[in-house]
Image 1 (cartoon, rainbow, N blue to C red):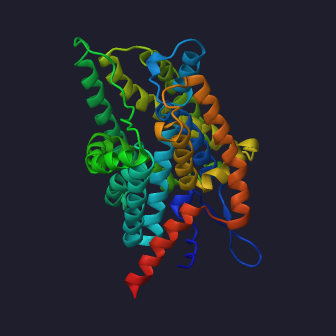
Image 2: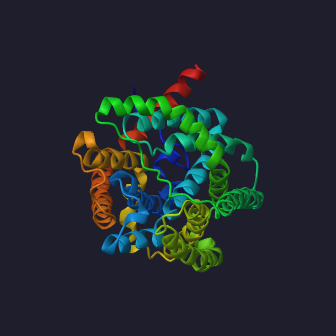
Image 3: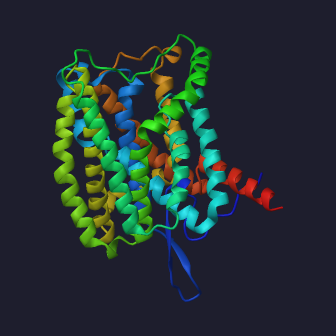
Length: 392
């Protein structure tokens, strides 16, 4: 199977990039916009920091001392923040793919992503988001003809509805006794046993998660699609007033909600565990928009500086995301070292930062030699290979 050709103007959203045409004496030269890649690379690092709670096998409300301090820092600055950026970028890329390549390519790509996500869930880790994004993202086809303003209205309506439902669910249980629930996986003694367990639960998990999280995810996808329509990520210099409002308004709301989340995650009560969900996602979105605003302003002024190091990791987004799962489950899961449940939040945070930072030079080295990540190449090869056959 030969490598497929690159997409015109906007690369495959699997790599998180974007290019804008630049006039030159000999014709248009496409220059890659750094902001989407940087945002995706930063988001990958932040997602790993939060996922360490699951990989290492500890519950937030059980942390004490320095571990509690590390957990508070994670909740205030990272929890719910970077997954929101990642989801918005998925919607941004999906909108660009529909506009440039059409429905057929879009559906083929989502079918490939669904298969990759299923394999990730069953063979590696129960926290896969690729399959969920692939399934829920299909509904983006309904927004293909919508402009930025209607997309923002739809995102606000979906987000407000979902947040209201989850807040009401938490408030309705305030008077009920019960301990905090845990989202940690059920781990068996051997790798084959875990694969069998996850294979049996994958379908139900995917449908249930899509039903519960679908409205919120679609709201984030629509925000990303609105950003694609407006060009705010590829032409940030044209949107400085908007980026300033995002930076100031987003962080003004998101940081206090992050502090509230940190408090809720120190409490063992069941109802407070439910209330932490809308606080995590609502505050996470606010801070995510604030982070986008800050990095957007830096990009608009040509001052990204050291943040540019995250661009290579962002271009290899899927490869790096899957590599994180492989590395961390190898380190922590009982069938590969018996470290699960023995680490606290501080040591897990330090390991996450080390791995995330190591991925930056490795990604840069890989791109310099191949030009594409292994999983990004596979997605393109499958999508465009299948599309070529269909046309024949």
